[in-house]
Image (cartoon, rainbow, N blue to C red; front, side):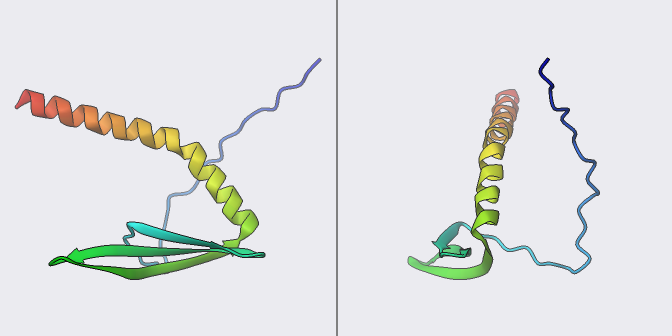
Length: 99
């Protein structure tokens, strides 16, 4: 008789920011993969009066194993993101139609 694994969802506490970690905006990212770790560099590409600059915002360095797991989680979240975006687009369309 085959056993099925029970899936549990942990109850996570609400997000807190006791150390006042700052958030940054990024619309561009670079990835550098080394033999031991992966470096993500988050940038903001800014266009001002026809001049384009790239402003560094943050560097995140992690082990390659952690990076692989993070990518897996992000790929798993992609369908949920698409669903949310479709709901927003539908709501916006309905709102415009009702005006």
